[in-house]
Image 1 (cartoon, rainbow, N blue to C red):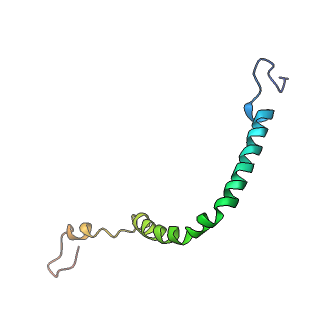
Image 2 (cartoon, rainbow, N blue to C red):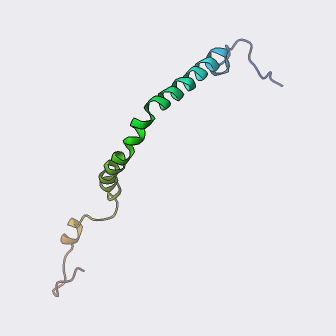
Image 3 (tube, rainbow, N blue to C red):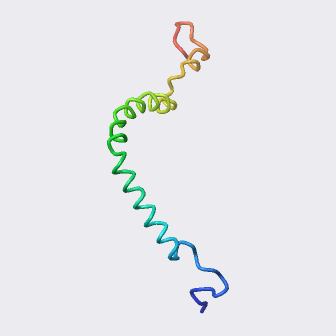
Length: 83
């Protein structure tokens, strides 16, 4: 049976005290940034919604088969209907 920890391998950074301190400081910074700039960020949401509409239209209509150039290249029957 092999040991769970290799004594020659250094411990992971994310299991150290420095990583925990880094995460706590980061969470405090995010909290204060949110508290100070919440009105600005939430005030921009309606404009971001309107900006998302044309972008979704451009990217989501890609695979719907709206390209009509394939229909013109099909040979037609004498009655005018595509074969």
